[in-house]
Image (cartoon, rainbow, N blue to C red):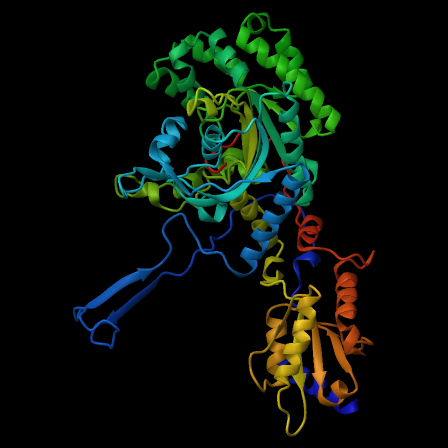
Length: 597
């Protein structure tokens, strides 16, 4: 017994008493304003080789080949703690989706080009087209909504709650550190069906939004759901004197108010889109307004709006929606914002997007302080024809954008089949943007370096004196018993590993517990459980002997206590994230672009 304890002390001295790597669950994240972070972009590496070297194919020409090892612009590799944090966000969102009856649906990553054509308005130019393969013209999917509508048109489905978590592709100007990618994940939840009363499924969708962010650990002061209605917008434009053929172009211009001041939006309306200046001025009196019930009540008293059939219907539906959101207890998360337009053509009813303080560009929230930064962040397009491909992570005029968005699209399925007119409403979460805000805050708090890169809970190790065999088979058997009990465990692949090397492997990955096998102790049916990182003088600093037969139960009990010391309940990675990952305060966050959701 004394010899084994002495060996443990010697091993600890050999590797030094390093500070323990803190798991995500123990981080104390605090709210703070969002600042852009340095992008996690792989190093570019020049790689070259000579064909004079032996190669499997001796017929290849003997010439030197050189190329740059990097990921394409707007993409990145995910590994370690980044991948773990993102996976936990996925798990949190999918659990909420399942709680509300969602059924998983996976569609191809590319669609026939004609399926995607004409669905995205001015954003159609961002679609990635593929070369002709086998006589079919295809494109990478731009979102998960149009493929879902295509699936509904192809299948005899009268109603469904569907969710999907998958990658989409847009040839947008990237800002990788802010979660603005060309390849990124969307997490969608949609309700399709015609036998529902107005605004009931819409209200549940917005309740889901609130649940997701609360499960992620954000309180309601830290995000805002901005909401509007396409019928209100269309009626508003008609009342202001916008010709019917200009309603969509003018709506697209209004949608840029998060990126441009009103003067520039008005200029686009009048000079580029040919709108009467008086009509533009009248539009300004509406799109500058936001609120909740008080704004709705004021608009219901607007005789001009109420005389317009489209605006009247939209306002009445908005009143119903607010009643239902009040019943769900989430009305306080809402901001009725008449400037919210959403650029996608397929929306027909209520539209919404979720913002935080980090959503807005720095130049929008602190214009007076950041004009110099904005000018320095911009580049001369005449000197760089590929400017649109440059990463803008450090450009203060670019924000994270909305972190979730969606709306009602009653006519999209009918575009594919006249016999399949199925009303739909849904929401899409931009995981990469949620990740970007979360990681930025954690790095600002200097906590992110302590996030574990794996979820392994136990490292099985062994030690012995002269003639030590390494006990590889015994370590394998113990690891197998832990795996069978659902415990995440690892062991060294060395036949005769040294004890300091085993401790170093456990500490470098932030593994919280070690199970240590000693030759004499194992003969007595005992093993030692050691919690990593305990202070000197702690009564269990050198570990505790337990029966080998009850090892899995002992480990699980100690993990439960460590994960949740107040209740002793076992906490999952999702629960840890919900408890510790807090969001950002939102103070009058401006409308943000929908490029990512």
